[in-house]
Amino acid sequence: MKRWCIVFIVILNLGLSDAAQAKPAKFDTLADAAIGTTSVTVRYYNIAATKKFQFQLWDKRAGRTSYRSIDSWFIKRTNKKKKIFETPIADLKSNRDYRLRYRPIYGGDRPGLWSNYLLFRTKNQSVTFNLTSAVTLATDDVPQVVMADSGPHPMTLQNDGSWSFELEGVSRDDVIQFVLSRNFLSTIGYEQFEPDDPTAWREFTVTDLPLERNVTVEQWRWFDPSVSSGTVSTDAWVVTDRDQFVVSAMLPSDYTDASDSYLVASTMQTLAEAGFNYVTIPYSARFLLSANPLTAESRSNKNTPSTEQLESILTEATSTGLTPILYLQMKLDPDNADAIANDLAGTHDTSYLTSYLTEWRQTMRDGVEFAMAHAITTVVLEPTFDTLEYSDDAQQQYISFIIANDLLPMIADGYSGILTSGAVNNDGDFSWYAASQLDWVGINWQPDLTDSLEPTMANMYTTAVTAVTNELASLNALYNKPIYLAGFTLASWDGAAGALPASLVPTNAVDPAEPINDAYPRDYQEQADAYEAAWRVVADSNFIVGATTQRYGYFDIHDTTEAIRNKPAEQVWSRWIDLFSDAPTTVLLLASFNFSIHFSR
Image 1 (cartoon, rainbow, N blue to C red):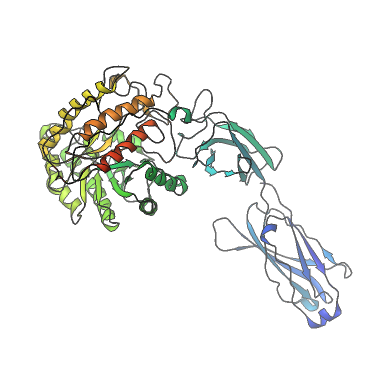
Image 2: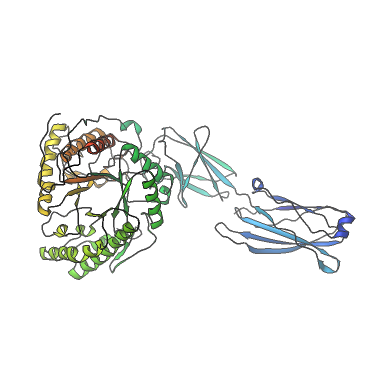
C-alpha cells in the first residue's frame, strides 16, 4: 500500500480583538467534490496567546458506521509571526474516511475549545478499464469487469458508446487478473478468447498510477445475434377446447446478486412483450448440506434466490402483469455438491431414504408456506428422489406409499392452489402421482421427434403424435389427471430433435459453461421447427393443461440448450400463446385422450 502524506495548512489570524474575545477555532468543511484531496486548509482566528496546537485523528473503514481514534499529537508554535503550520501524517490508508479536529493550547497549558471535525477521504490509486465491443450488445446488457480475486464489477456506459470501470485500491507492482463479461451469471457471458477457454484471464502488472487499460472484445462467448433470425411456420391452427391452459417461462436455477435488479426487471418485460402470462420461479428453501451423514438446513441461499430476493422477483413479475408459479427444489450445497452427489450414488437402506424424504418434505413444505403467504396459486414440486437408486421394486413401492400418504398431505396442508410435480417416474412402482393432493401430473418432456438429419415438419409432427400417445396420453389414462409439461424442452444444436442417439451426445453439447463445441453447431431453425411440430400435437390434446419452457435466461444467450430467449423458437412460443389465448374455454377439462391428426392447414 502506498504511504500517504497529508499536509495540513493552518492559516493564522493575528487580530488582537479575536484574542481578547477568545473565539473558538473553526475551519472550512470540504465539499463532496473535494473528497479525495491530499491537503486541507484550516483557518484559526485566535492566535495571539497560542502556545501550541493539539490534533486528534480518527478513521472509518468501508462498511463501518463509526469512527475509531487512531492518533493524537501536538504541534508547538515556534514562531509567533509565522502564519502557516505544516505537519505530515504518514501511513494513512487509501480509500478511507477520516475526521480531524484540533484545539489551541495557551500559556500554562490551558486548553482552548476544540474545533468542529474536518471530514475528508484519502485519494485512491486506481486503474480505469475502458471496453469497446466489436459486436453490438443487447439493449439490456451491462458489461462487467470480473476480477480473479474480487468478482464482477459493473461498467458505466460512456457518451461515445464505450464502457468504463475504475478499480480503486491498487498499488504499483500489483498483478491484475481480469476478464470482461457481458452481464454476469458465471462464464456464459464471458468474452471469448482463442482458443476458447472459460478459465482464461487477462493479466497485467500495475506500473504508473493512475493507469488506463483499453480492451476491445472481438467476440463474446455464446453471443451472436446474427444467428437469431429464422422462419416461424405457425399458422391459424385450431386449438382443442379446454378450460384453461398455462404457458410459462422458467427462470434459471442459478441466480447471483448480479441479476438482482436490472436483469430481473428487463427479463420480466421481455417475457411480457413475448406474450407470456406466467413466469416460473425456482426456489430452494433448504439445502442438502451433506449426504453422509444426511443433513439439510435453511440458510443464506447460494446461487438461488434468498427469501428477500425471491420477494423482489415476485414484485417485478406481478408489476409487469405476470402470474408467478413457484418451482420448489432441494438443491445440493454448491460448496460441497460433488461430494454430496457421490455419497447419494448407489443404493441405500430404507431408513436412509426415509430420512432423505423427511428433508425433502420439509423443503417442499417451507416453499408451500411461502406460496401461501404470497398468494401464489400454482406450486411445482421437484421430486429429487426420482434420481436415486433403489434396491428393488418393494423399496420403490414403499417409498411411493410414504410420499402419497405421509409427505404430500403434510406438504399440501392448507394450500388451496394447484399442486403439481416437476417430473414423473414412468416406473409403475412409483404411483404417488395418484395422491389426491396432486392436481396435475407434471412431466419434463423432451421428445425425440425425428431419425433424420434433415427433418421435415410433417415427419416431426407424426413422430410427436406417437410420443404423445405412448407417453402423455398413457399417463393421463393411468392417473386420470391433467398432464402439465413442467419442462417442455428441445435443444438447439444440429441433430438435437432426435437424429442422434442420446448415448452419442457429450455432456458439454448443451452446457453453456463449456467452450463452444464445433462438433455440435447451433441450429436454431431445427429447434423452432421441432417446437412447432410438438406444439401442434399439444394443441390437439385437451388433457394437457400447460407447458413451461426452461432455462429462460436473464439475458440473451445464443447457446445450444433448450433456452428460447431471442431465438426463432421464442417466436414460435409467442405465436402459440396467442392461439391458446384465442381458443374457446367453455368446455370442461376432459380426462380422456382426444386429438386428431393434421398434416396440412
